[in-house]
Image (cartoon, rainbow, N blue to C red):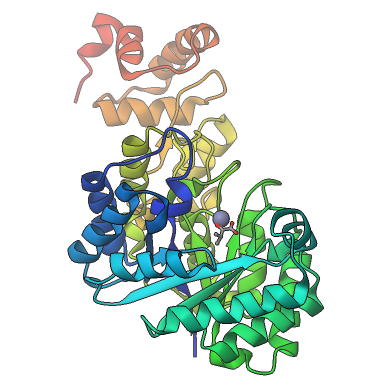
Length: 388
Ligand code: KIV
Ligand code: ZN
């Protein structure tokens, strides 16, 4: 029996906080519809108290989207919760996501409080939110740097107060995968009522470990992952949806965990978010980067042309990319050149191929990337006659 992981997408909340990534309500609705089509379970649509625009977006997304749960963020403050509940009034399934800092830093240097008082405020916020919605998620901000024993007390208290999901954020992206995995395991083993709620991961990427930490959390019992498209988010970003989903799919044999994501929509959703938010995807980004399925060295190209699986662990079609690409560079071999020529409609005998290949190498040493037009020019008039 496989387990099910809930995908909580926060592109429109944590992702949209990034400077320059702001979207208007119409654009947010478009992204929300794409997320629904992608199959995410929860869309975090905004932080309604933060601005009238955010409030309005949560209202309109609630009207526009039917299947996923719509979630609104709040602080552990009654006014925030009132406003979030109002924004969610059209949601078919609404969730309030409330919480407070639990680490030493947050308790003493941000909230000027103490551990017991924080637990009281956490309980009060969850109970207050429960007056409006059944589905209440609690976040223990900076849980990554919160000592496990105290975190377990917080988690038990909010579950008893009615939290249906408890989010364990690595807000500062500080933890290492073995630590984050151990934190989730500690909670599973030491919180008496943990089975009454779902534990969620929410990892930031400050040390480049957001995805690894999320997977460690899942392997130790978390059953919701908070993610964004392309990993956009505060500072170095959040865990990227496409990485988590494709890890679970590609390594299903050992993880045995399913999601509801229609993976064939991943690439187009990635492009849409990147274009709308004016946030380019780095070429070597896993799964959705321009080079994720591009092969440029001769040895790799030859191997892929013999059998794709020699150098590819995923089928690009599974994420909505038509096919892998063979890029012609000075590192390409004859096999890659012959392959490109065949695509262009040319079939050359060995002698002619050797001749063109020699010219190609000279050109490739000068150009970073040799295009079809360049190859056609190399062939010259004589070869044009050999066209199929
Ligand atoms: O990173 C974080 O801790 C958050 C919370 C508000 C969930 O984004
Ligand atoms: Zn965050």
